[in-house]
Image (tube, rainbow, N blue to C red):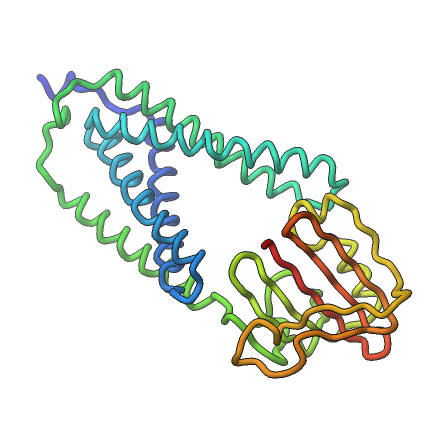
Length: 297
């Protein structure tokens, strides 16, 4: 009779718990992939921070929802409420910049940020409600330590993590490349860009150059470049009155050869900077070559 009287999670709580567990698996895969990039200190550090958070959250959410462990529900609630609180400020910032950017920042970014914040907050609240219905006993469901279903679920989770991590690592771009096609170039370049060379550094350092026409370059710049701040600033694209100098991708790696910068006498330029951030783009009308450089430090 004790088993029949034990509380059972509602369908809503079970569904949200599954979302949290799946999100934890995805974050764990991302963290493993980030840790594998030892040369990138920021990716490595981010992965090291995400690894324990994703493991603890996923395990505790499972123990709370499907094992009825009261302490696990409390831990999951605290973590989710904390994550929701941390996400609130970025969410508000993205909302403000989306509204003030006159459409230059896609609305789906705001929707994703809002969804993550809401799921974290609702998940934390549901865990608190579930915690109040549980006793202080370690396992109100009185089930075996590990059932065959749980072992199968664990094996499936390991397989999913392994597949996701492998896919993330394999699809990650190399730090730099020269004279490549758009199919293996950084995201965000014009689809018609050719002869692309780039460098992707740490702390937001990005530099690339490619061949294109002036109309495509104009449309590319006017669609929004760089960070949310640079997009929201609405800096215009201007004709070059005096020769413009911009750093090239070759400046950031000893494995690359060539001039560290180039001076363009005729064409177009875009330049935005704020404190230690900067986004710059130049088009050379005599060669139809475009140059881009951004940094966040």
